[in-house]
Image (cartoon, rainbow, N blue to C red; front, side, top):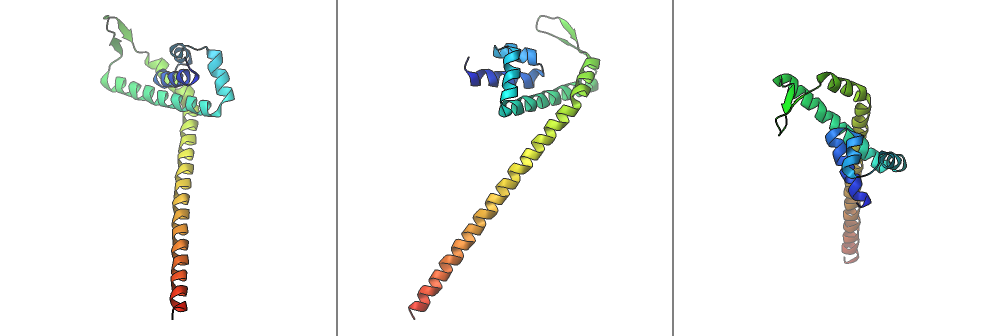
Length: 148
């Protein structure tokens, strides 16, 4: 599997399961490889943390839905019942609450930086257009005075 493919598969599975072991299995790579990649690549690490934040959001929504519906077990396609472990879900959410909040804050800050960069680029472009228009107007006035 090509490098990009395993990374994408790993990140997608991590977002779906919030489980590094399951994600490495789905990607066909070792846990040591993904942890090494995370240490070496800031971009991969950012994608990793964003996937975990997405996964925990999903877990939280699933937990809320189950509590509201009173659905504490599922039945798989073979008819086997699987009890949903509410306590473990809560402990998992609490254990990672701070890191997820930190990641969401980082994403918000990054979004704000991008927005400010885009606003500044638009302001700079507008200023450049105004300066060009002023230069053209000055040139036009100079030309019309020379013609008099």
